[in-house]
Image (cartoon, rainbow, N blue to C red; front, side, top):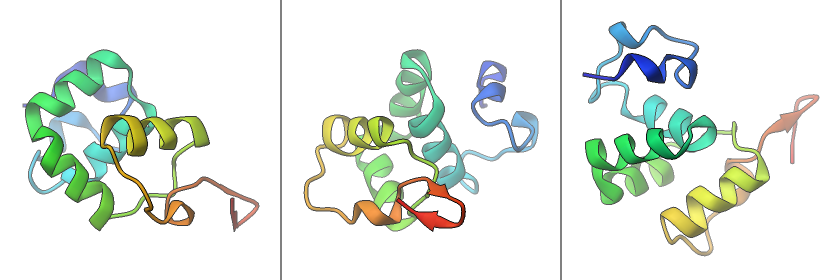
Length: 96
């Protein structure tokens, strides 16, 4: 079960309608991009760092601010040399 407190992070869908397996990419990216420490703890306990890393790399998401992308990819997941252009936020339809 996904905690109701994550509704603010998983804002575009109802938490009660999400499935941890089916919606893993959405959940992982939303929590990495918008969650706090407690949310990250839940994410790691729920999916494990290996699965989070696979989801991150296999399903790029353009919703990361630079500081969140740096933390998620380099510090939390230990990634080096990934294509940052697939993950940055867009401004006026252009990727940063």
